[in-house]
Length: 349
Image (tube, rainbow, N blue to C red):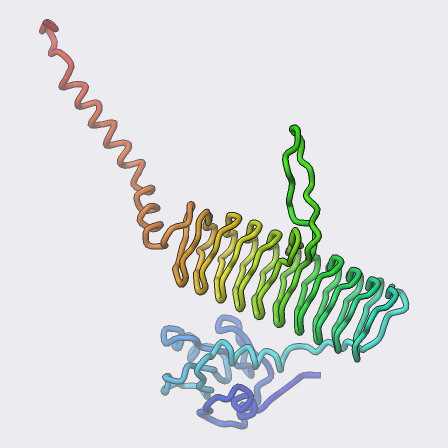
């Protein structure tokens, strides 16, 4: 059944200022390049306003400073965030009923909160604790003595090793593995002897972990992911790392062991971080940065080895000039060779 809302209802939902007919019916939401009649889109900046005005959108969500528009609009401080709220009301609902599927395996001494869902062929080990309204999807593995807070969602094929602790409202997407042994070996007589990894992993509240990401258990204490941090797909966080609050860690990032990351750090795709270093709060690491030493608070680093972004751009600019410089050097060498060679018919005395 199609869902529809009056524009005025959506304005109240996002706490925005409405300009235009509050009774216009909105049946969905779309991006500026794909929005259809009857839907709402958002404009994040002034330069996108003409595209919004010329689109088929029946209404727009815009920044508060935009006053003139040919379409009905909702003005708000953060159009992107407001658009996200609108998307949530048009998102197809998923009906997940509380209960334990008959094919699931639940061990001994397991504590289950209210309205928990455990799907087909899921496994919950001995001594685990599962908070209220938490969902464990089909074929997920929750190890012994794992603790899951309220309103968590564990997607299919996730593996939570023994002793992992998740706070409230944590989402772990398909294929992620949390709590595997850290990569720790000691050379002994030409071979690599494994160091026991007896620690665990603590994931604080409101963390989201992307598909096929891996977070290793600590050697002795805890690998910790701070509250509100969002981790993309295919990320690896090694043993003993401490990740701060509200960080954004994008796809294919690799963070080596015992690294400390402050709050609100952003790591773009494919960043690689050396072990035993510290990245200050508010730092931003550009895509494919190779971080081999500490990064100060609030700095934007990029390149390999990672350095302040402006400096890295100057290095790349110089690299682009290398073929021209090499050609000029060869020309100069040839000229010098000609000038230093004896003229034809002259002796070398």
